[in-house]
Amino acid sequence: MIKSMEPKHMMLFALVAVLFIGTGFVQSWNTTLTIFNMGLVSAIMALGVNMQWGYAGLFNVGVMGFVALGGLAAVLVSMPPVDEAWAAGGIRILLGLTLGAATIIAAILAWSRLPKGRMRGVAIMVILIGGFFLYRAVFDGGVEAVEAVNPALTGYLGGLGLPVILAWPVGGALAAGAAWIIGKTALGLRADYLAIATLGIAEIVIAVLKNEDWLARGVKNVTGLPRPVPFEIDLQNSSWFLNLSDRIGADFVTFSSIFVKLCYASLFILVLLALIWLSEKALNSPWGRMMRAIRDNEVSASAMGKNVKARHLQIFILGSAVCGLAGAMMTTLDGQLVPGTYQPLRFTFLIWVMVIVGGSGNNWGAVLGGFLIWWLWIQVEPIGALLMQGITAGMAEGSWLRDHLLDAAAHMRLLTMGLILLLVLRFSPRGLIPEK
Image (cartoon, rainbow, N blue to C red; front, side, top):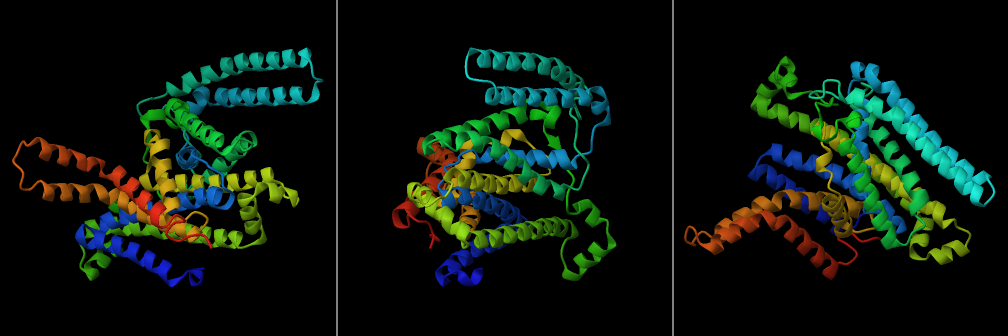
């Protein structure tokens, strides 16, 4: 895969590597690895968006909704079940959800099997209204019972208590299932309407996570998720680790944090490399050429017998699954699920900047954009603060201009992202590593 890259593109990756290494020398290796791990997750998110936009031209701005579903999967898979909550109302919640699903299925069957006319409309209304009240009568009581169980610490059903690493593919599957439902209804829309629809659906997903405490504690957050790597305190109490620290002459407390971050990085790198390999194989296959043909001219592709809507649904599901996988990895890295941090407009914009700057339609470009833009997102604010301090060094204390410039340092992130996007679109409109 790397052999197919041109030398100038490899130089771009080398320059990004220099940024990370320089951060380690100037600040700390802990800081570098923290940024690097989130850069890996960001690169995977950018790959997912690149599949949808770069391969098929689908304008999805609901990325954070699928990422949030991945985070939810980490809770549902890895956290231990709350037995008392299940005993209090877990069965009623499951029964209520079953009734809700049965109501929707019954309405769909009535629509498809009954003849057109007033009776079909009346039958569907009776099914939906009756099913809704029945669902709420069962579901609400179960929710109240579950959320009343020790709400300060639990107040939710918990998960399956399985290894957290299993949540990563489950997060992808959960996002893929949601993408299938969304795609069936929204992919027939024009590009601008599709963007509005996906953004709205992302807001709905995040609103559910914030308000349904029985599911994942809502805004009270789920903390203390299991980890696929050892805890720092366990390493510090291990003789083999203390001996290793002594041999390399490192402080064992600092080294334990670096060691844990390296373990995370190793897992994330394996996932990223596997995704790049699969993405490159797919992009260079007849399927990939067909997707690009559909992207470039849907009418011509349809005239050649290609099912455009089915292929759009396929790539929409694949890209969303990758975003869901990244969401589960991010929640695992954080060790907690905080629904309030999923801000669709802010972070969806950031992922799109990664894809556009890196080069849409090119998997390596998306990865490069993920690392570069995330490093800038984290580092621009402290660099901007230092720059403003240097500019205002000769100004008098209390000067309005000095205070204004120092306060403006907090907004350097958004200014820099906009400036970089403008420069890239002006001088390299196809991205730093354009599609071949």
